[in-house]
Structures are given as structure tokens and as C-alpha cells.
Amino acid sequence: MTSLPAAVQRYLNKSTVTGPWTLRGEERADFAGAVVIPSLAEGDSLFATLQSLAANPQQLTTRFLVVIIVNHCEHAAAADKQQNGIDLARLSELTEQTELSLAWVDAASPGYEIPAKQAGVGFARKLGMDLALPRLNWTEDPLLVCLDADTLVETGYLQAIVNHFHPSALGAAVLPFRHQPGSDSAQQTAINRYELFLRSYVYGLRLAGSPYAFNSVGSAIACRASAYVRCGGMNCRKAGEDFYFLQKLAKTDGVDLLTGTTVFPEPRVSDRVPFGTGRSMSRLLDGDTQAVLFYPVAAFRVLAAWLQAVEQNLSSDAESLLLRAEEISSELANYLEQVNWRTVWPRLQSTHKTEVQRLQAFHAWFDGFKTMRLVHRLCEASLCRGEPEDVLPEYFAWEGRSCHGTLSGMLETLRLHDGVSPLICL
Image (cartoon, rainbow, N blue to C red; front, side, top):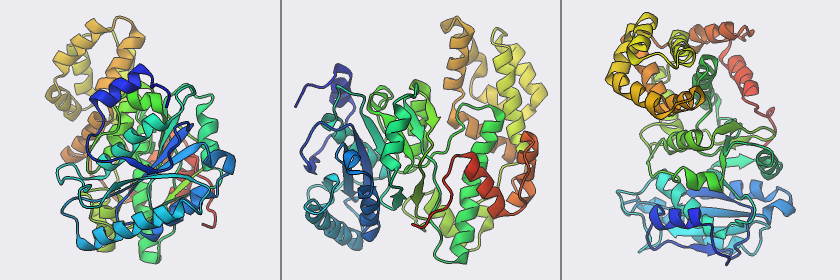
């Protein structure tokens, strides 16, 4: 094995996951990229995902290492432990039958189970991505791709990823996604509502001019491995790991929208994490429409005015900008005081002398998380969240775009806006 670049070795020495886990299966160490898939008692879903990956051209499947992290917590249910054992055995058998360059991590057998304090999807992703780093060809510009075990991909998936990063100046990208069809009309209605909610939030950010206007879906992320190392790697959060990972990448190397392929997550019901698709689906199917209410456009207009005020007044002092914030929204001004604006802004001005540097530093500080907190605070204070048919037409009117009045019509419009492929037979 050739020596790793110094930055990669430093990352592995300082920040990598430690424990008994290793990669099994494929032993090569010359890959152009790795596709990393956490798997917790997935069964047939995992192998359907692998089959969809294997349908990509062989000249690409031989260049990408596919890493499956079969994992569970040390206190997992007996049924999950049993299913993971079956999946590990199937993976071992599959290596003799597949065109994929297949490796896996056993984080499920006795002695390899993940401690309860660490267990979660963030830890599993990080474990797989960290273990993949030494297997990449660092004389090139290797890639890391996040996928989920319940997510199908198109035959042009790997090629679209390679094509994107060849000319792109940015270090990361989000892939278009479209949830697979629901098993019945109730599930279809629920996933349509939830997916529209995700897209409408990003649409609002885009209209407001936020640099964090991208979907955070764990099965739809790709980055340069060098960008992964530079941002400090994946986090170990039990939920929301994709949001915080992309936020770090946006600050260090930038996040782009990849086009030319779409991934298809399953619209599953789950209570594994405290929020996200599975939990929202569960609540919606229980009849709780209050679980997914949509943000009013007024919240994003406040955000837009604030971002514009800063961008146009980068030499103004903190107090002047705070007064401008008060004119936009008293709740915005209160929020800025809470997050120490009077202290932060002078420091950014003194540290970053040019306006370009200062604006970049502002956006690194007023990041995706602070943006989301502001939107939530505005809604809690005075701006009511509501039904999509009532709220979303104002988004489209802001952009001067025509709007289909139905939930499914608005969803399809935003899918096209996000570069999603037309629906295909999966």
C-alpha cells in the first residue's frame, strides 16, 4: 500500500473512529472512490440497493469500493441482531457472485457491537468512511459517497458522480432524490407531504439567497475525499448527521447540486431516530398532520432582508446593523442579541479585512443551523406555520413562477427545480 498524503494520515491519527472494526471482503487499495452504506437489520432492502448499484457499468463498479457497515447497538433487539447476522452471511456469499468491489464492516457480531453511547447512523457512516480512506488512490482525486441501505440508484449513478466532480470547483455535492412510491394511498400521501416539506424549506432558503439552500438527505451526498478530511470528517450524531456534515463541507469546500441522476429512498416508517423521515411518516400515518406544517414565506423574507442588509453593509458597525435588523423584525434583532452579534461582528471585521473574506466569514458564522433557528423562532413568535396549499403559493409568487395548486403538483414542480429525474419504473 502506498503512503497516504500527510493531511489524510493526520486525520486518521487524530479524528478517526477507534475500535475493533476492520474492512472485510475486497482487499484492493487503488479505488477512485467509495460508496458507504450503513445497514441495520435491512435484509432484502440492502441487497436490492446493492443490485441497483451492480447494474452500473462494470468499468465504474470496479473503480468504486462499496462499503457496508452492518451495525447495531450492544443493547439492540434480538430480531435486529439476528437479521444483521443473516445479512453478514449473505454479504460473504455475495462476493463470489457480484460485479461490485464489495467490502463490509462487522459491527454486529459479539465483541464488535457498537457501544450504546456511540451507536447511531452518524457513527456508522463515519466508521465506514474513515475505514475507506486508506483504500483510495490518492494519486488521483478520490471520492466518498453516502448511500443508504433502503435507497435504489439508477444505472448512470456512478457516472454522474464522476462527471460532476471532474470540472466542479467545489468539494461536495447533493444528489437529486425522489422517494419510492408508497405501499398504499395513505403512505403515498404522507411521503408526498413530507418530501414537499423538505423541498419547500430549501426553496425558501434559495429564494432568500442563503448559501445553505441544499437538501440534507443522508443517501444523497458525495464529496471529494480530500474535502472530507479537510472538514474533519463525518460526525457521530444519532440523527441529523447529514445536515451537520453538509454544513461543515459548505464552510470548507462548498456544496453544489449534482445533476444527471436521482436516488430513490424508501418511504419507510421508523422510530429509530427522534426526527426525520421515519418518525414524521409514523406521525402522519397516525393522522397527526400537525407533525409536518409548512413555514410561511414571511419568515424567508425576513431572512432575505437580513442577508441583504449584511451583504450591502459589510463596513457598518454592529450597532448599525442591529438597528437595521430591528427595522426588519424585532424578533430578528432579539435573536441576534441572543447569539452575541455585538461581540461577533467586530471580531469578524477585524479578522477579515476584505469584503469578500468578511462576507465568507459571516456566512460561516450565520450558518445553516443559525438560519434554521431563526426561521423556527420567527414562527414561534408570530408567524404561523400552515398547510402547503395555503402557504406555498406565496413562495412561487415571490419567484414569479406559476404554481400547481395540489400537493402533488407543487411537489413535482419543486422536484424539477431540484434536478430530479422523471419517475421511472424501479
